[in-house]
Image (cartoon, rainbow, N blue to C red; front, top):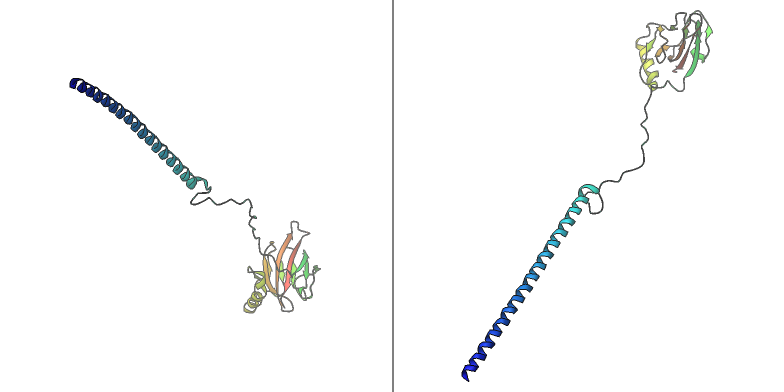
Length: 213
């Protein structure tokens, strides 16, 4: 009887041992599965974070889209007007445009605009165009002037007071400006605007003239 009981107990002990061993094997499999799932999840998170960081860096460095630390400035479609360039200074706007044919003279004190036949710049005539295409003044003192038109009257009066006598002849090249005294003693300036003197027997000059009173 006692032998049978011991045999039954041994059988039960072996059975319980096999059950415990099986349970341990199943729990080991479950633990490995859980660990593998955790590793996979960690890898997915790392990849996702890396991709997001790269995209943000791309936006900051190159695109200027939202999320950029320093967005690129917007471009304007408007075009600026071309810069203006200034030409030579114009002669006085309130001067007289006068014309002298070769061998004629003008009285600027009375505002003549067309020359009259005369032997030279004498009597009432202030400026004369001779046969050699040179202009001559009555006063005998001609001074080149290169300053601004607005200062011509004052400069001319001061210069004539300091040097009343000078060469009375001046050239007819367009753009040149001269100062001299009229027959009535007023400062005058003339600017050569046009010169057509290609032939010997005919020719003319156009001047912008002003008498400063």
